[in-house]
Length: 100
Image 1 (cartoon, rainbow, N blue to C red):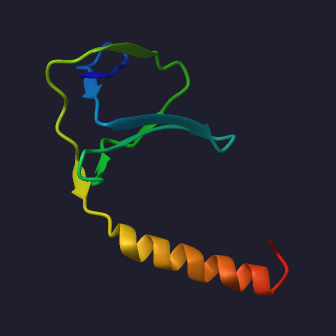
Image 2 (cartoon, one colour):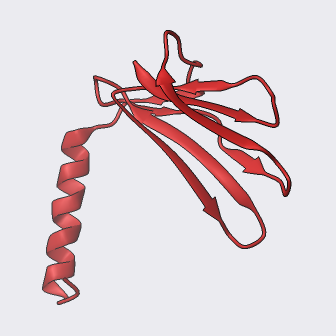
């Protein structure tokens, strides 16, 4: 499966792959964070380590074919029906207020 091999400062790499995998780099002007997540075939939410990067850290991301992945720290089932109901309820509320 194609995925990401993430290495920080030559530490042991983290292998991230799923049906849909994401890496997010974000900053709040004081700190830089790397978030990694994915969704599996059953639409479960997978979450790997959220990492705080420090000034001078060396981050290497390789896109490659992975035979094995690092086990996710969490695997959460999502209730798609509930999410859709919530979305449409909130959408109707915002439309009624003229916000959207």
